[in-house]
Amino acid sequence: MTKHPMRPATLLVHQGQDRDPATGAATVPIYQASTYHHPGGVGQEFDYARSGNPSRQQVEDAIALLEGGAQGFAYASGMAAIAGALSLLQAGDHLIAPDDLYGGTYRYLTMILPQQGIEASLVDQTDPQAVKAALKPNTRALLLETPSNPLFKITDIRALVEIARENNLLTLIDNTFMTPLLQRPLEFGVDVSIHSATKFLGGHSDLLAGLTAVADPELAKRVKRFQNAFGPVLGPFDCFLLSRGIKTLKLRLEEGQMNAAELARRLEQHPAVRRVIYPGLESFAQRELHFSQATGAGAVLSFELNNEAQVKPLLETVELPIIAPSLGGVETILTHCWSMSHAAIPAEAKRTIGIGPGLLRISVGIEAVEDLWEDLERGLST
Ligand SMILES: Cc1ncc(COP(=O)(O)O)c(C=O)c1O
Image 1 (cartoon, rainbow, N blue to C red):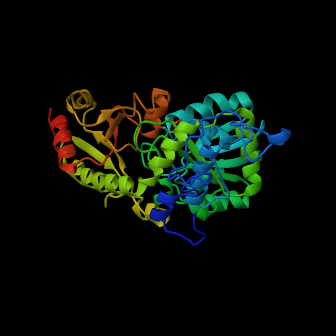
Image 2 (cartoon, rainbow, N blue to C red):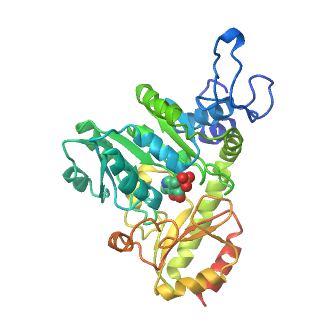
Image 3 (spheres, protein in one colour):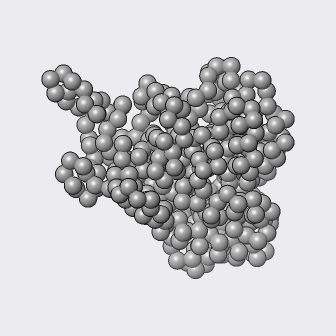
């Protein structure tokens, strides 16, 4: 890769390593090997695949470059990436996380971290004062997710980084919904940016993967130590798929975003819909804050039906979207948050934070928007 500074569209295509250094092949090959020859007993750059291999190095360098970090890490899933970042905490530490967050992260924070002696407080992070009020003498980190999932609560990244700096805390962010194309948290001083690369970065619903980018080389050494010691790494073939997906991120995400904006406007006018939550809408209360830290609204929106009894007929009628707990594919994906993506959160907790059984999340793909609308409209009218 050239040493001159490049724009995102170029970085996405060429990434850190855009051809095989050994042969000049147009893509870095799938290095399907678990171990590496030590000539004369001397270890080389790659010695054993858990510690590193060229296919993984390629995507790890790509995410570091795209996020502007010192080092990147690739994991077998987004959850493994989150666990990898949270390995920076230790027994006795306290973490402040958002009250509206991905269900799997909720499960990890409330069921796994306590087993490790780490306590998490779930706080409405849209209010920096609430974050300050939740600080304890043993608070060591803030975990952010903005926009949050599925309610699109926007957290002021700059304000939370300031709180973190005043109190000597680490800041971690789940940047899955935005990707580094739309939001680059490390530029605001965030320490670790985390992705479920299963979503937009992979982009084709054919891959489970996680990525992190770490700002500081010393912090990166600690993340590397855990990744190597625990071993939840991304396999070589999946690294290849992920690198291939990243190349077209701009085309896919911008097209999906345009379709999402159109569907959001139309859903807002539909009599069966109580509310639409999408940062690109004029009616979105935190629009200004979102666009002060991101360059786009993304391709995912949530909407709530007037009557939760309409959910079943809608899911039975629509033909185009996959009905599933995921997002970020080229195809449209419709999620019933209550029973799918947020099933791990107890019913009472879901209701308290505003996730009702009538709420649906739609990750808008790159199909013809008129086809998507006609399909949705048929489901909404039944
Ligand atoms: C925002 C967010 N973070 C993390 C995850 C977990 O990622 P994975 O399913 O790749 O483990 C998801 C999965 O849906 C997600 O939506």
